[in-house]
Every structure is written in structure tokens, then in C-alpha cells.
Image (cartoon, rainbow, N blue to C red; front, side, top):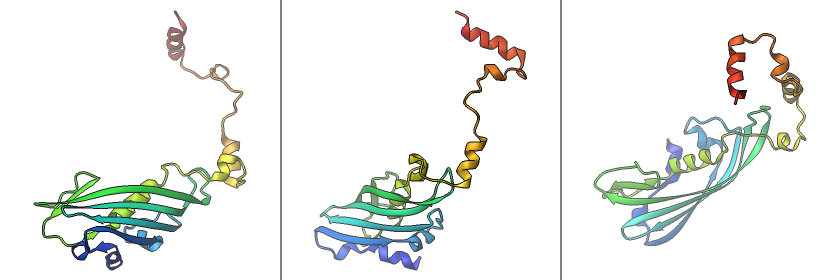
Length: 180
């Protein structure tokens, strides 16, 4: 976790007002979290750190690309990432991170590590289903897509043509749906 020291901000020495921090994120950052779903990462995180007299406001902004494998064809492609996140840090009796947008740290603290928030911002910005742009516009040609097309069911077949092996009890139940 020595590499994570770069993401520690010692706010006790900062003046009241806005401060900017920039982070260049690549795969080594994700290795610290044992996260290996990205083939490559090239991301820039801008952090606007505003120190006020009673609290801290952190506005994260991430932009860049991560190289991931397509969920359909397993072909690697660059997925654009762009997202923001706002965190308010307040001071209290004890550490509390129950609310995802408000962090409470003890009064004696003098620094905050933002690595976990950057990690979560990036990982959550990646779509749940990663589809290669070539699949969406039909320009990607691969053996996997050809095999999927070959194995897909024919559109001409309907359930009525395929009733030779059905259980007659289901046919009776289907009649209930069509009876009025």
C-alpha cells in the first residue's frame, strides 16, 4: 500500500479555499485493489478539494478510457469513461462512512486518503454490460460472432410448429389463456 501514499491529502496545512489535485491512473493503481478486469487503463482524475472552516468538500471528476473485453464476443476494446462524484467530509466523535456522500472523521484527523473513492468512481462508471462498438454497428467480424449466429434459433420456428414433444397438460393450460 506504499503506492497509495500519493493519494493521501494532508488537509491540516492547507489554507481555507479551493485546491486542485490531479491524478493519472493506470493499471498499477488497480493492482493495489486486486482488480484485474481492465486490460489497460488511461484515466485522468481531477479533484477539486475545497477546505471550509467546519468541513471539506471533494469533487471528483474522471475522464479517459479503459480497455476491457466485450461481454458478447470477448474482443478487447477501449471503453470511454466519464463521471463525477461529490464527497463531503465532516468532523465528529468517531469515524463513520455509512452515508456514501458524507464521510465523518474524528476531530483529531489531519489527512484523508482518496484512493478508495477514486477506485469506486472508476469501477462504477464502467457499464454493467460491456459491448464492443463494432457489434452495435455491425462492423465487427469474428469467429465467436459467426458461431453465435450459427447457433441462434431460427426466426421462422414458432411454438406451434414445435409442439410434437410437449406435455398435454400444458396444452390444456394454454387453452385457459385463450378462452374468454
